[in-house]
Image: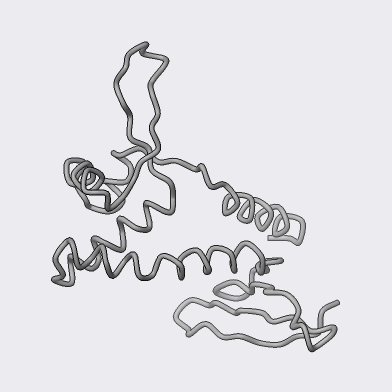
Length: 157
């Protein structure tokens, strides 16, 4: 992948992260998380998750279609992972809610710090930008197949 293709990809990736109203249908959330549609409706009734209301104007009916944000998708995934670990639904929701600020912080970090992506042997190098007190240097995350991710400091040119 050349530099121009990398820049297009990075720009698109960042643009996707900016969209707060990226919505998935209940069937898509169910399939991706393994949580049944019935269970998702129950969780919504209990106030554990919330959907964005959407009416299907093309069929000209009053039927309500549940659509969920990517943030809710992650929340459902986290709740289900705690349930799989043996927690009750209530405890899983509490544990997930305790970490919601962390999820938002990680999203903000990705949005702000990924400046460029370069393909390297068996992986990628992510330019995470400059260090405030070290002019001319950027931190890079090197992520390669079958290797632990590492951070390196490089001259920025």
